[in-house]
Image (cartoon, rainbow, N blue to C red; front, side, top):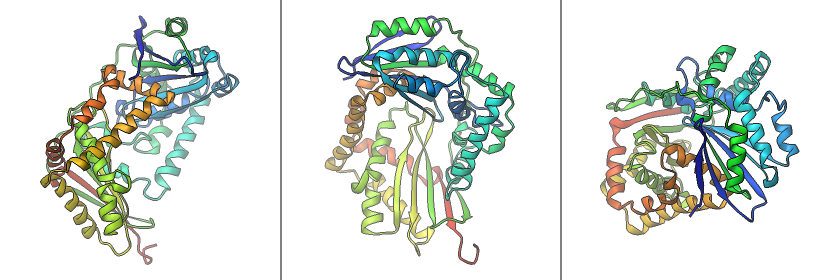
Length: 416
């Protein structure tokens, strides 16, 4: 059970505090309700770009990292399709440093031609290194483009192509910041050796006078149901053949999400997962094989990905995967296997209650989902997943017409 207090400033900033009296440290977590899905299709990668830009300094803190280190802390951030999250861990008695730094860059982060060109260069190099010049680096970009027709989940967080970042103007970037990085689009959570009353005072002091922006209303296109089996083949200079499958599934907020998560555990729960046990260990068609979903806020995808052993054809590999998926559709899972999978999912949730950094993010995340109290009730939702729910979800999920397949084919020696 996570105990917390919540309040809201007049400018819309939501603040959550979880006190840990014996903890000498504190985690300051600031989550922004902006991700890759909020980008213009012709200007993708902006949310990730801002993950970098926010560390380029602000009006009263020229070097963000230096100030964090001087306070005895460390900071980092991450971006997803649905959100952007910044966090600082530091001694609890230095918590005001985090309030100062984060409020200063929310109000006046340094965005000029010099900082923009520098961070654009960093992001473009990251794009090239990890997505264009890495074996299989563009696999998910190709799979998403194959799976989605209209929804912005069709591109990765890094963006569609480097040119979108390279050609971004200072005016476009500043407008993106003004639209999204406002207190009414942010959730602040503080966990550790702090008092709620202290956090309330500091939040009002440092964030209370930052203006809001209520002009942005998220209106995303609804992805139509997929009714055709889609396939594509890529021939590339990679070590071995690989298969990437995507099935349209529910969103993080749908009731069937919990059964979908359990299915991921059934298929890929470590060495006992069905895919590993049956197709990697017992019948070694693959060197690795996994099934999972990210739990995105809009209609998501369930992925199955695997690297094929030499001399295993795509047809043979796909047939073996479909056989395992069909078993989930036609046979009820045993109570023992179901309970084991539910226990493993629950253990990861419980572990997040122990780590202050994970707890701080979880509090902000569940608030963003719209029901912060569910941070303490979701275990029940998983415990209520039944064998019938697993089977029905699998039947809806694993249909050929709901599937897109990318075959990543290694070049032959003659083609290299």
